[in-house]
Image (cartoon, chains in turn blue, orange):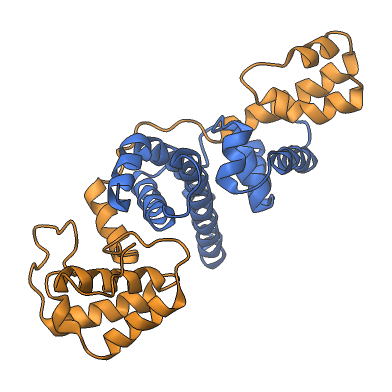
Length: 164
Length: 164
C-alpha cells in the first residue's frame, strides 16, 4: 500500500472524529476543517515512520493544532482589545453563555499548562484515550503520561481552586 | 492500599471507564479519600464541560487533503528501503549532474496523476523536478534510489539496478 492509499484509509476511519475534536476546541467549522487538513498532511509526511495505528496519533495532533489555534486567536483578540477597548470581550467563541468567569479561569489555566500536560489531560479526560494509545501517540512512556496527568490536575486545582 | 497510594491513583482511576475494585474498596472505608476523589471528579467534569461536543462538522474533502499532502511531500517512485548505502546516493547525484534528465521522460510522471496534471513534461522540467526531489527529500537517499529505479525501468537490462 502506498502512502496515499494509507492516507485515504486513515481518512475514511478518522477524518470525522479529527474534525469533531477541532470543532470542540475552536467552535468554528472552517477552522476545524483547516485543522483536520493539516493533521492529515502531517500524517502523510509521517507515515513511513509511524508506529502503530494512526488514530491516536491523529487525535493527539488534532488537539495540539486546535489548541495552538485557540491560543493564537486569543492573542489576536487580546491585541485587538488593547488597541480598541470599546470592542466587547465576547469576541471569543469559547465565551459560552452562562459560563462566565469560572469557565474562563479554567480555560486560561489549561492554556498555562505545559504542552505535554495539556495534551495528556485532554486526550485522557475529553478524548477518553487509553494510556497505552496515548503514550504511543505522544512518544512517551505510560508512566510519564500518568505523571503528566497528575501534575496537570494538581496545577488546575492550584489555579482554579475548588469552586464548582 | 495507603491513602497516599490511593491519591496518586485517583487521576488515572477517575478518568477510566470504570473504577478499579481496589480503589472502590479503599474509598468505601475512607472519608478523607472520598472527599479528595470528589474534588478530582468535579475538576475532571469541569475540564470535559470546557469542550462540549460540537454539532457535526463535515471534514474537508479527501481530494483537498491529498493535493496539499502531495505539495508538501511528494511520494518517491519506489519505496525507499531503510538504511542503504552512501555510494548509491552519490551515484544518483552524479547521474543527475551529468544531465540525464532526458532519460526520465514518463518515468517521473506522478503515480496517481490527477486529471488536470500534465501527463507529458519536457525533459528539462523532469530533470529539475528530479533534482528538487533529491534535494528536498528528508535523507535524500530515498529519492536518489527512486531516480536510479526510474533509470533502471527506463533502460531495462542495465546492470546497475537501484532496486533491491
